Length: 425
Ligand code: NAD
Image (cartoon, rainbow, N blue to C red; front, side, top):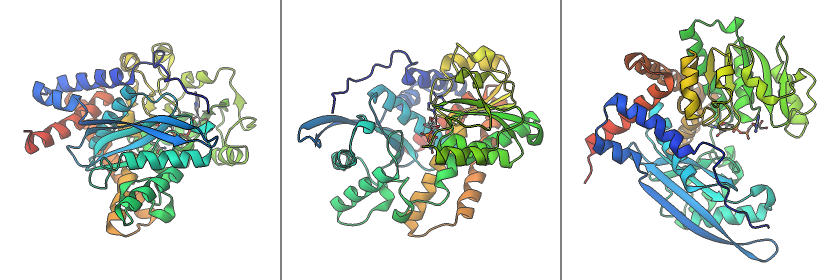
């Protein structure tokens, strides 16, 4: 395997700075004291480990593994593990803090954490990845735990990796501990409803926002960027609720049809076509896929990657409502333009929190030794998402701030109050 240089993050906005910009605005509105500000600003724990792995060619390669616990004030830390070539401590710190705010916004009893290993899983064999997951788990044995820190999948990892993690952790403890990790395969204690949970939460947030903006779903149009787990579920569920999905996109390009795209057909096409929309004939391919973001639609759902709405294109966005399925799709610098234009943006830490909510349900079911029906999972997560939207909306009215800052205010207020009751040293 080729040595992978740590990727610089120079061409993106630094995610830690982006997060801190919003955090600072919310802290100021909230009148947060300097003492509590400093507690919430700094991650509680940062662990960096070296993982020597014997590769298939017999050579030993040393990988760097990171786990950051931003906060365990509300409960055990929760957050995914990213396997990617550009994993970077600053990025992991930002993502861990985001998890703290996300869990607090939806009022689930978790703090925030995030992990990562700098590697390129696309260039690694299944055996190499398995050894890396097991080594990472053993190195983090004192960090992880159902009452301490509960990892989950993120970019480059999935149910398969979570199964190895659970197995390694369980072996080290001499018993099965399935509540140590979420996002597991169903047979190992995964939850029904987890696959569609994030897209479903996007749909609930979008409908709640449309109600406030007096947009009738049956007369509304929508464009969805990204047609993976989050984007395709959001598109399908929004279509079921009456919206006309006029554009979808993935890594192969963007596809536009003014009369509406049949989402079930698009999903079936993607699934029969190696997971991409390349060659999809139910719509016309746009010459520039980024044009999807600037279409004349009521609702825009960025559900692919970060930093797609930036100062370069924010001025040209025509949607009345943006619902952030992806993490960090809007750069902090673009926020002001979006607000100036009067566009409501339901922020990532609220709109895509359906995923962590159902992860929490997975952990609850594991601890109960019981399995809920999909109907129960969906009903409870819909209620949590709708309540969270209403709290954030109320805060946006009370503090006269956009929904993004309101979401940070709700989250920071909850963590700060809890910290004040618990006290420090
Ligand atoms: P995924 O890998 O299933 O899908 C990503 C999709 O985006 C794919 O269709 C891919 O082709 C497309 N894509 C990649 N680059 C693109 C580009 N430049 N333009 C257009 N499309 C592009 O990932 P996912 O799980 O759906 O996650 C999408 C986003 O949602 C990420 O930001 C992720 O962090 C966030 N998120 C996911 C979950 C979850 O439960 N899966 C939860 C919270 C947040």
